[in-house]
Structures are given as structure tokens and as C-alpha cells.
Image 1: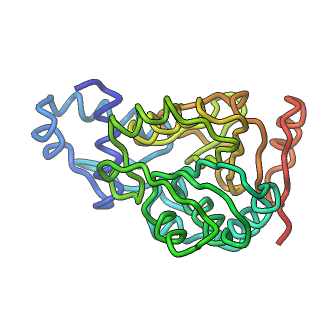
Image 2: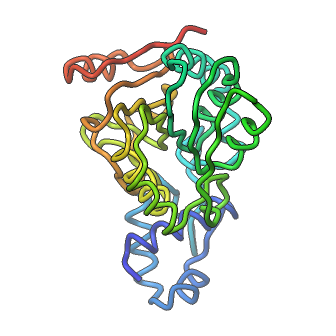
Image 3: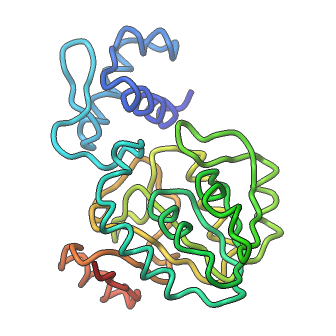
Length: 254
């Protein structure tokens, strides 16, 4: 197993349990305890965990990088404002690809008043749309990615090669002007990379807490995004950096 794969699995386990132990991880991954301690040291330097005697715990404070339900529920006001701003950019009759995530889910919940084709791999988004008569829905299936509501399969990734959409509404775990867009799960990264390639226009939906942060796996550079929709709490220095790149940024009103 490559070190990056161990990092991913360690963070998944930490995300679920709140604590990981060196001895247990050593057995699980069939590597030495020294190797695991090195992994934990690396992840601590990145700010993803805090080492304690015999293992590690989640870092202190408000950590929004781990995409689990209780954290996705935060900043709901900002996410709904972003969704309303995104809705205003959609034209009747467009074909849009909707990436998984709480902000894209908020956008899906607002759709239904005009004809639009939606392609998604997120079962929560699909569930919010399936009774809306004006929405032509296509769901790309597969196995569940971790504990998220997103699905992935080799067939779905191949299908994305044949699909052309007007817009992609993209989610991410972290955004950094230099390091680009990143997530913690390699399957999420694979999906997002492929999704970007089939869209005429890529719109990133990200609340202000996602900016200035870096997750484990980069899936796109900031230059691969055509526009960003975020909330008014975005750091002004970051906003200036984005404007310097001539990247359009829509600031959603509450």
C-alpha cells in the first residue's frame, strides 16, 4: 500500500472513530509501528490530526475538512445563499452535471420551476429531484464512496467520457489559490477530475470556510475553474488573489 493510500485510510478511520491507535493501524496495514508513527507525524504537520500517546485524535477546534454529516450541516445559511446565487445562473433547457455535496444538494432542492437536465452521482441530490416533473434526471450509479452519498464505478467514469454538459456545479473539501482544489478521498478525486473534463463551464460552489485550506489529494488547479460562487465571509486577501487571476467570483447575499 502506498503511503498516500495509508494516509487516506487513517483519516477515514479517524473520521469515523475520533481516535486511532498505532498498534491497531500497524496490524491493519501490515506495516511497522514506526511507519505508522511516521504517517501520523506527517498528517499532524498538515493539521489533519493531533498525536497523543499511542495514537492520534482529531485536532481541536472547528475542523470542517472532514466531510461527514454533522460537519456538512454547518454553515447552512451560507450554503443556501450560494445555492440561490447558483440557481440564478442556470438557463432553461441547460444540461448540468451536479457533483455531490451539501451545497450542490441545496441547489438541487431549489430546482424544478423550469426545464433542465440534471446528471449526478449523488443519491441525495437524485432523491430531491426525482419527483420534479420539469427536471430530466440521469443518475450515474456505482458503489458508495466512503460514508458520503456519492456513488462511483468504472462504468460511470467511462460514461463521463461520452457525456457533454453545459455546466458542472462542482464541490470540494478545500480550496487554495496555489494548491488548487483538494479532497481526502481518492475516489472523490477521480470522479471530480473526470467530471471537469466533460463540462463547457465549471462553477465551483464553496462556502468561505473551504478557502485557504488544503486537503490530502489535489484533483484540479484553480485555473480549471471558470467561476466561483461563495459567501460574503470569504477572506478579502483570498478574494484579491482570485481577482488577480481574473477568475470571476460571485458573492452570494444572505
